[in-house]
Length: 303
Image (cartoon, rainbow, N blue to C red; front, side, top):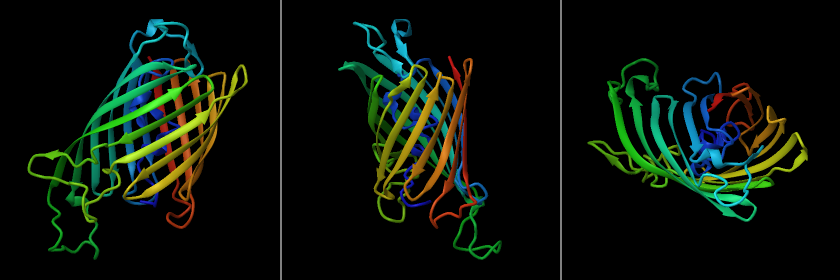
């Protein structure tokens, strides 16, 4: 994995920001059900793949007032204070798989002309090692030092947490994914993330800090520049810069740049209650050959 690539969650910030921060639960105009798939470095054997499904909504939805960015505060009890949601995911890279589920809760309050929400999401996941998919250093000859029979499964319980603020002019947030560093396990196996040998960046505690402005260029055109910072101890710091345009709430397009990782574009369209989004990235530098691109698609339904 390339340096500074903290988690596939960060790479889905434009596709589905709810994955990055549980405090976003209940901030959407409707209750979005989203199904997404990401294929990283297409053409490289064992490259990471990701599939996810999420849903979130706000309670007391009949009291809400909206603009294209979400809620507009108009008097006491103008919106539901509680957001709920959840999701499932499957990550696979080489012989390793991570399968998990999270339940999300967010509480919203007024702050100035916008809203501030606090989110918490208990997380359960399985870390699966499929030994039959090990690639032997000398081809197909048996290696007495490598056991290629069966699977090993380690269970983790963890928590994601965050805060999120937004108004009709700007948004910002901070989140911690896998707060416990995914070192809590049960059963006969354990995979604590201590010691250089056992550390895994996708099990480690990761931090995200993001913000952007949403000036309305015209009544039906919103231009949204944003910045996302990310960190975990294994892969260090990284950041990505995004520029997204929304037209009539039905069409979206944008550009993205991941520092020393990749550059690409984003596009989306809404047809009635259906949403389609696509993201393309080409790697930068020498860590990954340019021809191995990354593709991501999402299909959503506004409930």
